Image: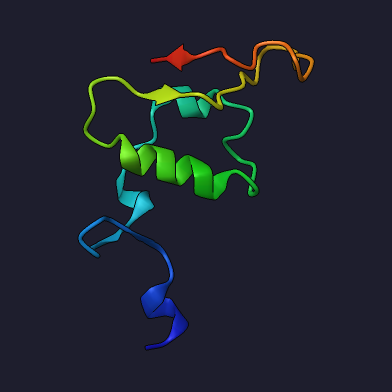
Length: 81
């Protein structure tokens, strides 16, 4: 097996998942982390895990339109969309 065959995302049954085929929730498009390469894997896993759910929940959401909070503020905030 080469690296292309074993890299990527897989479900519990070993089926390969393509994050490009999962629609990006509107919440993600307004998130500061949306285009952050360091966050891409975590964001993809979160979207893949919640694919098909009625409500998308992200505990790491940070709005692009709000000033950043101090590290201690808002740690337990939950954003539902």
